Image 1 (spheres, helix red, strand yellow):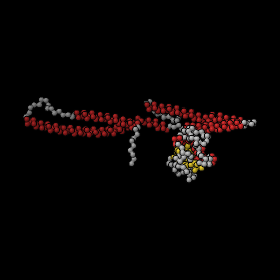
Image 2 (tube, helix red, strand yellow):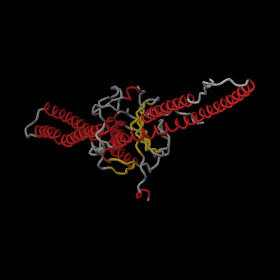
Image 3 (cartoon, rainbow, N blue to C red):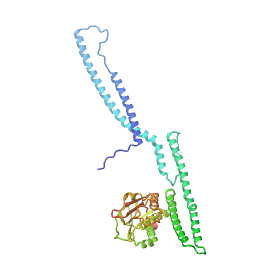
Length: 406
């Protein structure tokens, strides 16, 4: 049995109650006045007319009886009319109550129709189509002022987003040029014909390492900015399994160096507690190939870098009716869930016992969360009770392309 839910207190409901109550009170007042006037106008005077002459007692008694009978009949008629008037008033009041609610709802709907139009248009506008405007037509009233104010706000947001996109487009060249110059200067200094002191060579190697770290950090910043403020220009239908396979193949050397065991959709006896579901080669989603590739690369890099020697990685791809899901699990120490929840924020890491390498920028999972959100999905991080980390990325499921199905 479905549980009754209380209706939401919307503006239209409040207007309906207000207008209905006003119409109903007006009807009640009109009916009360009508009844008072009708009942007051039917009173019968029982006093004898002036100038009545004395008559025969027998005739007077008969006339008195006749008058009494007529008065009784008149009283019955008056009572019947009063009852009919009250019944008619009650019926009219009930009809007016229903009509007042209907009319109140209609009037409230007409009053709020421009606001519904503004709400629907505002929901359609996102970061990808900030050039659109509400452009509400009508008299210069409060609703028109509200629509014009929203249009002005959209114009300012469009200018701000355009400035951010220009920064993302220009920052890569402007910021990487000095890094390239510094790296070239180091190479020239070390490659001189005369013998180079060992301290200089060590310093050059250290500077190259730091420059590489700065380069990775800059690349992470640019990717994060592009994900959060850029448009998905290269949107296509992509296979999650193909992207994950390419990421694993590219990192085969790192997996072998740490002697890691990878349990993927090709392995039936894989450990861990990943979400159950049937792995399917037909799990597809729509999005930017560059961003989704970077997202999966970051997740697998995180699983390799923050793993102990001889550990394992569990990777699974599942889907339900509307959602494609990529799950990556690793073993390790038992982690604090509160700290794990903050891993998707920039520069948040776990303790040094899990971070064995200083090459990370602290932006990996932040980029993963931003890319997933840009594609209408989400990142879920969970500490496994047995130890290690459970990473699940949910994305909207796309239909299998015709060429892939064939």
